[in-house]
Amino acid sequence: MTEWTLCLDFGTAYSKAAAAPTGAWARFDPATVRPLMLAGEEAETNPFLLESAVFVDDQQVLFGSAAVQRADQFSGGKRRALRSFKTLLSVSDLDRALATNVPGSIDPHRLFQMRDLIVLYLAYLLAAINRAAGQDGDISQATGLKVRYAAPAWRDADSAGTHASILRLFGEAEALRNALGKKLLSPEGLSMALVTKAVPKAMAAPEPLEMSLIFEAPAAAAYTSIGLRDAGSHFIVVDMGAGTTDIAGLVRDRDGIQELADARYTLKQAGDFLDGIIANRVLKAASWARGTEAQTALWAMLMRQMADVKETLFAEGRVSIRAQGRGVTVAMRDIERDQDFREFIKTLEHAYEHSIAVVRGDALVRGRAEVEAIAVGGGAAAPFIQALVKQKYRGKPRVTARPATPDWAHAPVFAGNLAPVFPQLAIAIGGALAPDEMLAVNGGGVRRLAAGRNDTQAARD
Amino acid sequence: MPAVASSKVKRASKAGQARRPSRKTPARSRTLNDALAEAAWAEADAALAEALADLDEVEGAETAAARRTALAMLAQSLARAGRKRGLTRIGEVGGKAAYSAAAHELAVPAKRAPKRVVISARGVARGGAVLAKPRVKPATRGKKPGRKKKP
Image (cartoon, rainbow over all chains, first blue to last red; front, side, top):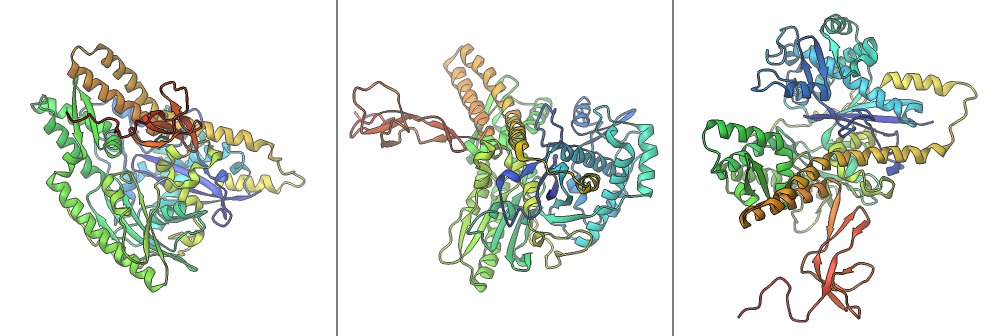
């Protein structure tokens, strides 16, 4: 019997969870890493990804893929599913944000505040985790389960205070899960009558939950350096997500892991910004799409396919798109000609140069010979991000770029199946593998606050 | 979650309950691997479906330009499906190497094994396993493949 550690990761689009035996850091065996099938073993799509979505229908509240499918039946944006919990959970004044009313496009009944829908989704997520953990032969027999959640670095907020609010939300969600049980996972969702009755009760009597917090940058450092004989002491992590591009410098010593406050940068240009540039370039190249209606249709189609468009653009340097019976091709060099993009790259390079100087400087002072550079997030494969982390520097400490998918993910035990899906599960896996010293907040008490963090140093609109 | 943890603590503390033998491990690994493979396939399926549709476009193209466009789309869809499945290419088209029967597949029959070969089609690997060897032709001394001689 073993104690296990589980980490859940709210992605902007999907939630993920992974588990590993507690202490995996000290005696790492790739075979013990266990991504959890949150969407259920019967899921027709990727069973490890749980759609982060809640849809308030006329008579029901739907979750996950059922919520997304129902929302897709409405066109014109009049009705939407609530998504992007991650963005909401990282706002500076969380309690205030949670107390806001939900827009009418999400809740036409005008019944819910943000808090209600977040608690409902978290209850659904906890039910999915419980089902997945119960189906795993090892985890279901664990002597105990430590639970962590991964989060981006809070901005303009007190970590401990935000963590307490998050714990309260999870406590309410756990009470709701206990009250509703398997009904939460029904594809038909929950009836409105049940929801309006059960949610206030759960909020009035939350179940206390012990959860730890790990920031995404240390989680990335954990999955990158675990099992390496030459695991470094210094890391620079470039995380390009949907809303922001974050650069963090980390140093690991005997006391744990801490962030080098002077190395932190947050740029407001990231995946969404890039999507806009690509879409505009495609629109410009598609000479046949003229008129508002044709361009709106093309824009909407591009946004639906944007993940694949970017994947191909980054991998091959060009992408061809078929729309309205015609083809259009956009190359990476077209994007690089865009004035906004060039300014973004200039700012990004400046921020990275400053950060790497801080991290290398600290490594030098501590007599360390190496800094590990890691790219994570949806933009990790972008050529301009890869160019940053692979940049060579004269003298010591040297900077070594680590692959987005670590070598251990190619271990024979996975028969080549983990590596293709690793990037999506990476933060959850890293969070489960990380030793306690890497946590931002451990259990009920504050272990290591991000008190040394600076607020955003470079932010451009 | 706590429900799992607490119930498992109770189960674990039952007196006399023997630890389960490890005979379950291979089956568990297989299940996880199957699910991981399914996950990767779920991502690749859409690209593969696109490729099949693109193939029809190639075969039905009425002009050379339409055929070129359709071929480019087909190549893109297939490459995307391959990446989603974690497939990587081996070698570079036009690259030269010492011939090895274990590492190369001769694209044209030869009476004697050539010493040096030029890659005419890249190979494909997944993880450490080679799924298709690079196809090669005997290298011709002094002639660079893919480049026309100057008149």
